[in-house]
Length: 136
Image 1 (cartoon, rainbow, N blue to C red):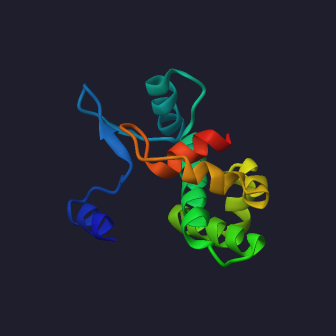
Image 2: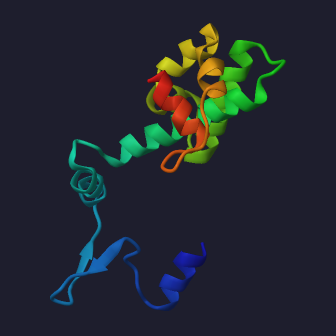
């Protein structure tokens, strides 16, 4: 809300825009948002790619660190709930669209616990991301 209020105070009604080299105001579209990762990463990556990666890593961390005495299904749903909260989305959307399907089977088989135990923080990835790489 603070950004909106500041923008309104400045009489700037376009929240997602930038000033071009000619001084004109340009809207930022979903195409811009998706072009940036594709151009930066050099592949077909989109903003959703990063949402999926983040949600999956959050689910892995949550399941690995909080399911010591929790049954598999409850632990997995709690992990999906944590990812949904981070993405400001629902459990169903997060489970079906963001958390990688391999994570559900990895929680049931024990592969997630094994990946977590053998993973550590690294220079470029934290422990949850390292475990996620092993599972995918």
